[in-house]
Each structure stands twice: as structure tokens, then as C-alpha cells.
Length: 407
Ligand code: MG
Image (cartoon, rainbow, N blue to C red; front, top):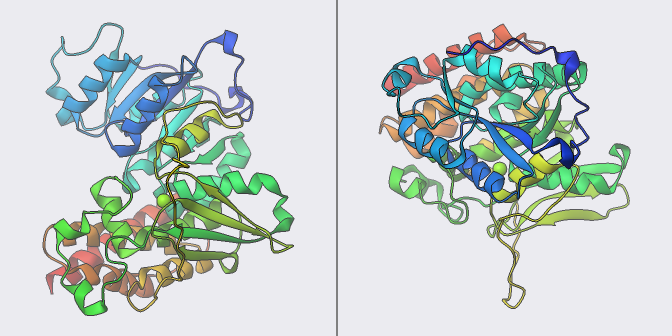
């Protein structure tokens, strides 16, 4: 396993400026490359006409897919986080010029290398926090798809980014839309951020019908093609709850200035309202390749592989407020964004465990938000937690859900 030296955070390049093209392509570390966002990232890199090149691809244990990707795009490093999965990789399985590194520490070390220009943080769930933290610590420009990093530890991560000069560019489509619309005004001119939500596949279900929803039904999202965890979060609208918390820290606005609007077509990705009442939105067909490319190429734009509108076809845009009775998760998100502290970490961990329980047939669909609300209300709230406090309460919340699922 290679043991490269740690880079100094102070040595990080100015994050807001892209390197001149004569210096070669920007080197991208793709964390979670075998997932949905990771695979789309490799498509963006492949279509970038030499602007980007993969420096490392990392996955937890999907080694078959990871090796396929390595042969297709020839990164400098392949990182397998799970040592057991890595042990099954034969010596001749790697393409020439690609080296294998194993374990979470190796990933954190490689992410901090001076050659890394951009880090795409797309590891799903709480597991993505450590490597994202390493990237921010090294002052990198981070394309953040792992919303849990900000949900769990938003104030800590944003403070660290200020100290190291790291930039966090959202990959979440809603936050990317807000980031783009915010460029039209100053922070003092912003009165409201409105996150749009597709409403998921059960937008018109009654509360009674929601209790009977099956796993197969929950996995069929009407507009977005995503991994299973986020698809279920989208169906419960817990995804929007997590996004409210993410927006609260990413954009530094109080919870009162954040709102959710159901928009089934997923074409308006979010809206920003300014003091004069003007509202700016970002529109595009639902395709994660656009926000990924925006986060990689910011502050520039260039042609890319994302889908385009066909203006010869008629298009309809509907909006409606979310129903808090049928989708209580949104209210939990507002509460956690407003209280801050340990609420995001607890809500996120409880939800991850509850979704696991639903997928295993131990919990009903409507139990997910109910159990999350109960764990959130019962936790020992801390307004200014450390990273250790966050991790401890994360573990506590998971155990509480397990207990609840067993009774
Ligand atoms: Mg989103």
C-alpha cells in the first residue's frame, strides 16, 4: 500500500480559480465512484475534453465495478475502503499505472495530496464524513454530494473550510440551483431559499395508504434515477428534511428563511427570493451530470453531457405546498435546521437505521418518520457539539431505532 506524505493545508492552491489549461487537466478524486453520483461523475470527466482527469476512484467494497471503472479511465489510485473486499483483488487485476490503496486512512491521506485539484464527495451516508473532512482540512475544492457531512457536522465543517480556504460546492441539485441563483444578488438581498421537492411516488397517497407502501413501490421514483437509500428518503420526504439542514449550514441562513415547495416535474431545481420580491430559479431536465459538472468547473461553465430541454415540446410546471400531516419528515427537517447543534446528526442517523429497518421488513413506511421524530425529541441535545459528540450521538440514535423496531 503506498504511503504518500501528507500535504500541508497551507499549500492548497487558490480554490476559486481554475488552473490554466497549459498546466494540464484538473485531477479529480472521486469518493464513492461506484454509486449513482460517482458513475455520473466519471461520465462528466470522460466528456470533459481533457479538462478533468481521475486521480483516484474510491469505493467501500464494490470491487468488481471499481475495477471496471479503473480499466475504463485509468486513475492513478484505486482505493478500497473495506480491507476484506480489497484482499480478494488479484495482483494482475489492476490496469498498468494504477496503484491499489486500502482502508479509510489511506483514502484520507490520498485525498489530501497536493496533486488533487477537486474532490467529489459521493460516499453515501454518515460513512462519507471522514474523507470529506480530510478534503476540507487540506483546503480542497470539494464537490459535495454527501449531504450527511453538513447535516451531521455543518457548523464544524463550515468553520474548518474558512480556516483552510476549502470551498464547498454543492452537488445536490437543489443546492446547486440555489448556488447558481445566488450569483444574481448579494447575501443581504436574499429573503428566502425555496427548495423544490418532487414529492416522490406517493405524493397523492392518503396517510392510511402510506402505511401499506411496499419496498418495491418506494424504490420507484417518478423523475430521478438514484441509489436505494436516497430514493426511499425521497419517498418519505426525509431527503428534503436533510436538505433543509444542509442548506441552513451551506448558505448560512436561519431556518425561518428556508421553505419547501412540491414540484412534481423536477425541472425547477430550487428558487431564491430577493428583497424586492423577485424570484430566480434554475431550470434543467433532471440529470445529476449538470450539478456535478457545475461543482467541478465552477466558477466557469463549459459544454457537457447533461440532458437538454426540447423546446418543440410543451412543458408544464406545477407547484404545491407539502402536506405536513402525510409527510411529517419535512417538519422534522425544519425543527433540526432551527435548533441546530446535535439535531442534524441524530435525525440523520435515526433515519439511516429506520430506512435499513424498512428495507429489511422490520418497519412500516410511515414508521420511518415517526421513529425519527421520537428519537430526535428524546436525545440529549447539545448546542455546540464536537465531532466526537456528533459521532457518539450518531451511534446512540441508531441503537434507539433498533430498540424501537424490536418492540
Ligand atoms: Mg436533492
